[in-house]
Length: 139
Image 1: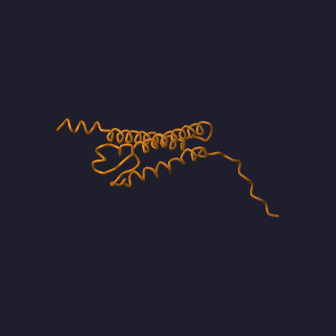
Image 2: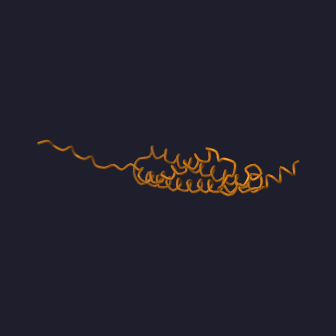
């Protein structure tokens, strides 16, 4: 019985699903670190240091988006395995056959697409002190 479970564990499906899980969780970890950097900038005086940290957080967020996106692209390759085909019929890469992809995968795609905007927000995040504009005088 142990050999059967080891044979199933060596199946391509488990390899692809584990790779997807590692990539998505790694991207989430990078995103969490960049969020901590963004929180730190609240307590910094505005200037060059704040701008550099916001730029670094933006690059980290962009890296996290690519890592999580690649994890979501790798996930469907496991649908081509023999174990999934035994349950889902004629399944293939990016085609689930008789099975359905759950809402978790769809929500993860939406979350990564929304996270794609974070680096653009980081570019405009540093506070710039502009000289106050004088109020127009009424004649």
